Length: 74
Image 1: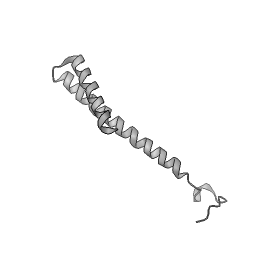
Image 2: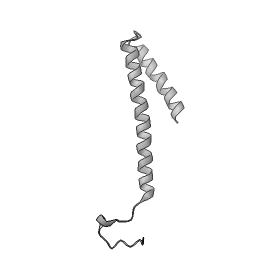
Image 3: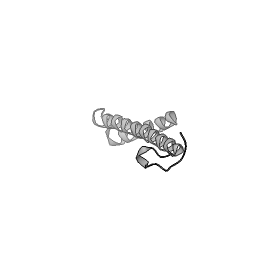
Image 4: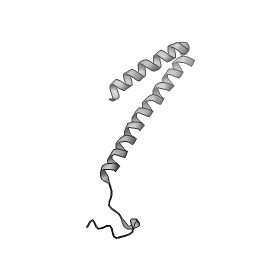
């Protein structure tokens, strides 16, 4: 396919694949870190509400698991 952009955009203009790659990598990173934080939050909430460790115990669980998750997922 030649790289002339005389056709309308709907028929296929040239793509910026480097920008697509950056966007996809950012999406994957945000999904990975967001999922990790949500799981850690749920575990800390369960420890605080059902485990009987209270607010500060759940906060410590949250901080420790976030640090461990950051170390393991980097």
